[in-house]
Length: 368
Image 1 (spheres, rainbow, N blue to C red):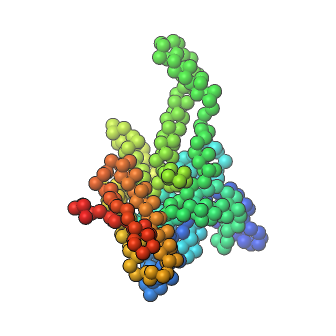
Image 2: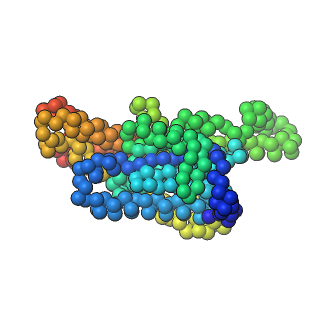
Image 3: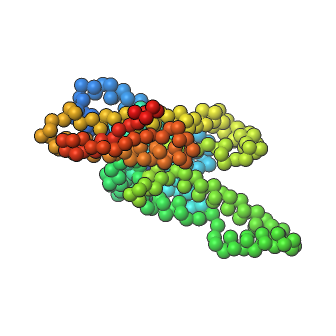
């Protein structure tokens, strides 16, 4: 933890004054089905506790790793604060003053949140629902105060499906180009045309063109990352694409990978040591996600234990089933994106006969 942050907090406590209200990027999420678990299977509370504890421990380890990382904490200024209560998790970072760096900071934060969401599902079988937004808050070790938390919770409550919805404010920031102006780009294009035509170009113009070219490459990289980290749902909600795994090898030409890795080793040996573990095994991730989603579809398509007269339970179970239908649709979209049709979830829709509720039949490899 930053020494100045600790000193500031101690002074605030001694003076009995709250931490000032600041702008934050805020991610808030909770575990889908948490309340229903205790209503339906309270006898398995200890078993569930161990699963949740494992997921939360992994989350805290991810946060600590990011805060300890020279690349994340210093270059992206990623000091992540967290609040966890029961199944509710809040993660936030302060909004920075340099607008040119905000897109990369948001992308880094979104990537970490997606990794946490993916870990909850593939390692612990727990699906999340939440929101990611920007807002003002005061936060310390004891409480959180401010409209930023309210906005994040409202976003979580509206999103329905097991996803982390992204607010319009975040999308607007990602759509902006704060690296250079349109006038600068127009000037760089004129210089580029002169270079291609063989005309003489001054040293100043050449340096200007090189700077804009570098910034344009950064802008294209950030735009590509943002597009990969976001998923536009059929109901027009934009959410985090948690099955997208960033692999630096797909963004750097093969001949330049060695140089890039050597540079990273010099800048941050600790991050370099973690790198081999961070290369994603997308086949394993998709295979595991498929198994978990299929289990949920099968479980919630079985209405046999519900008495015919209890239509409210039929309605409730169908609502849950539809949430995992969303997970199935997203899963198959990512299989297409990664060109991995062997991991498709193949199903047929039907209905149970008593109240005509949705049933999803999962088709196995043999077509049964």
